[in-house]
Length: 157
Image (cartoon, rainbow, N blue to C red; front, side, top):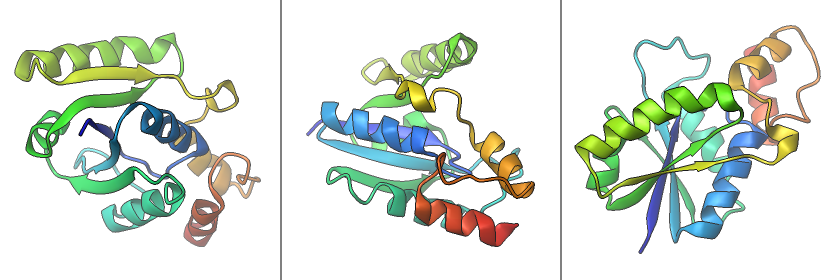
């Protein structure tokens, strides 16, 4: 079974993230969206809330799962027999960081590949921080995030 890991903070998950999961699900037998726990980040949603939102937003994808992890993604991939780490890339500005992480992961686990996927162009500018800011100011967010996420975001503000 070819398993891919799609890590991120998903605070909150956007339609762009879901689009990446959908694309990865066409390439791999199983895609695990991995809600990362980064103590340096000040998340709006708790780990449990983010995991629930990811599960709800990707429930329509039969070969998609979600999990959390308190360590390096590459270690999770080894433990769960992943062959690839999926990274969504929106613009050239994302590339340098993703390249550094991919090369570091490759040095630690050469058998695990990094696969960069582009979201549909209608989602190419979305970021979770942009969505949080729009929601904080009472703007419409339904075009950017799944309905189940919009509801939870409105509750926060």
